Image (tube, rainbow, N blue to C red; front, side, top):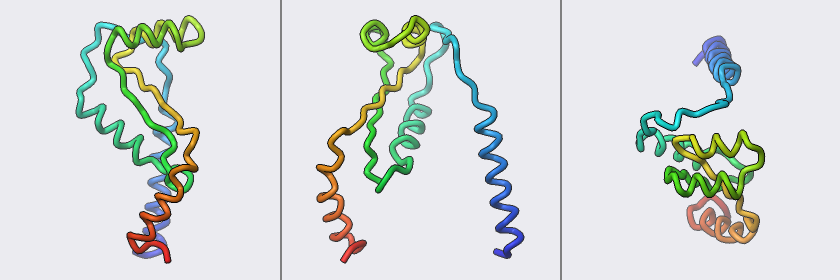
Length: 122
């Protein structure tokens, strides 16, 4: 690849990212009667989340997707701050709950050993 095509490729990628970032919007309301989000779409989102880069690739967060109306209602009533977040949680098609691993350091020795066994470390 020539330097100019590499440069134009990088510019195109930057433009695509800018377009995505600038085109994002927040949802103020969800239609509680909207059709369900396809499972294949949710799996794609989870895969993207699970494989996103993190410090030392430790992936310190886990995501749970909640579709059950009873559980969403309980989350809305017990975990959400502000009336807007309560009704959004109740009305959304799927609620993503992110959990942080607060003891990530307990996995470092195992990861190091896996890398060593895989030939990535001496």
